[in-house]
Length: 333
Image (tube, rainbow, N blue to C red):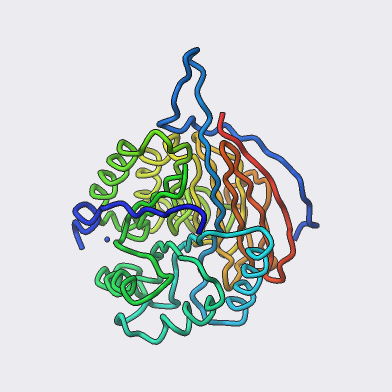
């Protein structure tokens, strides 16, 4: 592994309360991201660009143990052999349909270890609504996935929400399933604020990841009126409130799943948004909110490959056959 991955010591905080377009390449979009905190200023006052190199894959909604999950895993192996990968970010709904029942549940083997057995790098895991049972609020179930970190060489979930660093990138892993029900909102708010404040001077990119999207053209849609709902908890109103305060303009990028498709949306509220929830199955777009995108696909399962080199991020979307569908870039201001 090229870069050391450093898990933050967060247990004192995180355990509170417990939680088809034609392929095109070379396309470039330059988004208005916030200047990362911690970049140093030179003698003339000009910010010094962050330096570092990180490569990873992003996928979610993959916990089926079906043929698509295995095919996507094979495609990841192929792409990583060609382009390099240091780790994966795993975006929730890890075990359909109702999570696991214990740390020895066979689903850890059938829906994680076996599909990804040929991928020799860690998976940094977020929790999704299906990981918390049929209604998404059986909070005890997260402890089994947290505990499994001690028994796996690649599964990394030290707590329901946590942070880690790779080179000049800091990742903030959220538990959005809890936010839906307004569970552990303040601990996650304190976590975000403390981790942003403690980011070192070498951190140029702040990337949040979680299960539920902030904006999306999928069936669930935008936070605040998921599934066409308004006012109820299931509309995602608490997620919207949290993101408006703690993610928008503070995070450079947010990766999510929940909608079973892949999207790179135009930036909004000072943050880039990427949905990569097609790790094992699909659901058609609804475009209820008509969010503009650089790329979107709901026709074939796949994943996103991401490279962050100094102040530039490349996102490449691949399908389950390993075909490149789109590649674009964005840079820090």
